Image (cartoon, rainbow, N blue to C red):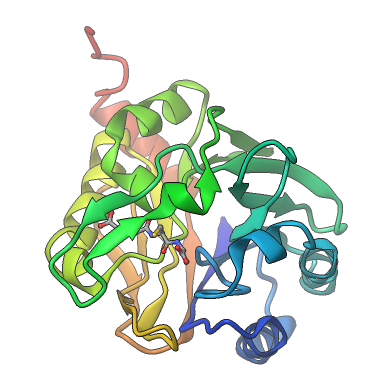
Length: 264
Ligand SMILES: O=C(O)CNC(=O)[C@H](CS)NC(=O)CCC(=O)C(=O)O
């Protein structure tokens, strides 16, 4: 049994404010034994100066380490911009801290959201602010093996197959999914990834109208390997908690061994 917490936010461009909101939302969980906390994409800042933040992430990374240690839980830090190499843009990086507050791994978003969407924002050009990563990551938490992804990655099932082939049994999808695309695609894609890969899916989204006028979909979810929605949010900030029973997952994988039936 693993107890997971999924945080939904409506982040602004004010880093201190956003971190204080998360502290506030997580405070009631201190008395519960949470094993894993997932934060959404751009949890620390949405709509700010990506390049400036990407060069100066020390404070936020320290906050992540402290938060993991305080809750004695794994912390999967959705994404922050992180300037890895002066010759390129920031990566959109998901830092993972263990319950001792030590950095365990970092996944850099592979698929960047360059798309025209039928909302007021219309044109998304993530690649003008960010450089793409290329390396999928599975975090080994013992029985739980966490396959990392970020937001637009959700549309690329081949990434999730790679993660599952590398042993993943829980998939995390921290996001800032738009209101327009979320309404049509979010739940369907998440449940499909859970069903086809026979994995738990933890999806932490941004939700609401942000200071920069972007509107995100919310509806963060925890989904079982059978595709059932175990917990879901509406449009407002909050925290979802669910227990992930790995026996349920093994049972599904044994009775319907789709992953072993793969031919291609
Ligand atoms: O740019 C920022 O400030 C933070 N990053 C994001 O919001 C990213 C890139 S624009 N959003 C997505 O990937 C949404 C994907 C999506 O909505 C879909 O696939 O439909």
